[in-house]
Amino acid sequence: MLLTKKSFSSLRRFSSREKLNASCEKLKSLVTHKRSITHQLLNLFNTSRAQHSDDDQICDEIKRWAFLNGHLLSHLFSQLDKQRHRSKYLPLLAFFYQCGLGTNIEPVLAFYWYTVASEASGEAFSQHKVGACHRNAFGTKHDDKAALTWYLKAAENGSAPAQSDLAFCYRNGIATKPTPELAFYWYRRSAEAGFHHGQLQAGDCYRDGLGTVINEVKAFYWYEQSASKGNSDAQVRLANCYFDGCGTLKNDLRAFEWSEKASRAGNSIGHLYLGDCYREGIGTEKDFELAFKFYEKSAADGNLTAKNRLGRCFHEGTGTPRDPKKAFYWFRNALGSAGWNKNAQCNVAVCYHRGIGSDRDVHEAIKWYRKAVLNGNQSSSLHLQVLFKQLRLDWR
Image 1 (tube, rainbow, N blue to C red):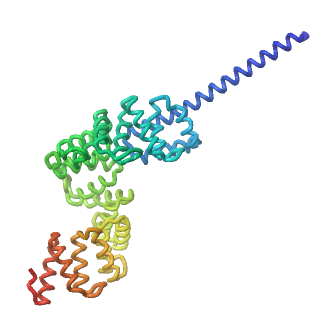
Image 2: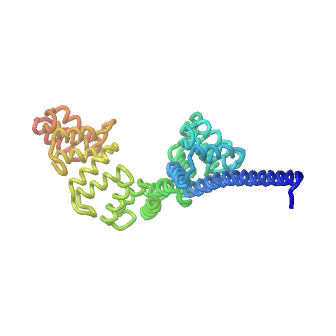
Image 3: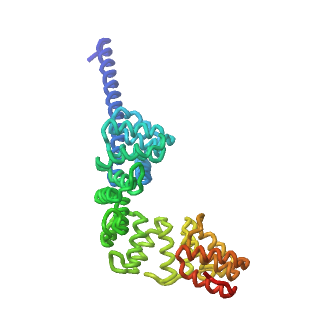
């Protein structure tokens, strides 16, 4: 069959339509793919925050997901920015601005989009963030009253982190009078919703009798719940419960294990407790060198008790060579900026009294012994009596 000129023209038109349809399908597929990416990202974000993860953990989840799926954060941000007309994407867009994901950290824009999201849908996560922005002067001026208002809205809408922050305001009298009962109520609500920090604080309320009666068993329960979620502050409190048998049976091995977990998480008190375990052989064999190592870690984080322990190590030569000058240095360092560490006060006084690592100075010794006595250090009273007898003075 011969093809006429008209047949060729029809064939070209058919071919052009095919190409056009193919191009449309490709474009449609591309748009669908891009929407799919932002939708997957939104699902990841919603799942992560529903688990009450900290912002850093949510950021890490997003970065990990982007890396594993071959997406640039800048590309994700660009696609997300195109969805700003859809309210469900606004909290995620604000979060990208808050954390600098694929863009610069933009506090003003983060605050703006969190506010828009809150007003558009009454979404609890965004309401909490608006309150946090007011509280921390992030993208807006510091305003505790506004923070309290937004925390209350978010808390009533079921945000467990907001419930914990609201409880903090009631506990410390921020933009309201201190109300221990309300603090306990909201901490317990946050704890029951599964928020690790709320669980930690609920434990503290039961331990200290804040807004409720003291109940060591319930304190232990909430510390255990929070610790199991990785809260290192709860882990050291749990270790302390096992050390002293508070709310549970005394268990040196469990005390050591929880101290070790807290230490691995970088908690300075965890380092201190682990050092004590190795020094005293609590739940493990004695190891003075390891004790010294963990005291160093804790002291590097600014822990005053650990600094005092380091002074003792250098004074006694345990875990490290004896060095009176370093002992005196760490005892002085352990006083802190306010100088109110009573054990360090006593040790500094002893150094001045006996000339350990410093020149003997009776006046300085008396000064620090007296401070330690007033601060409740009983051994300083005995040391002061001895010193005054040596000087033949009335120690009182």
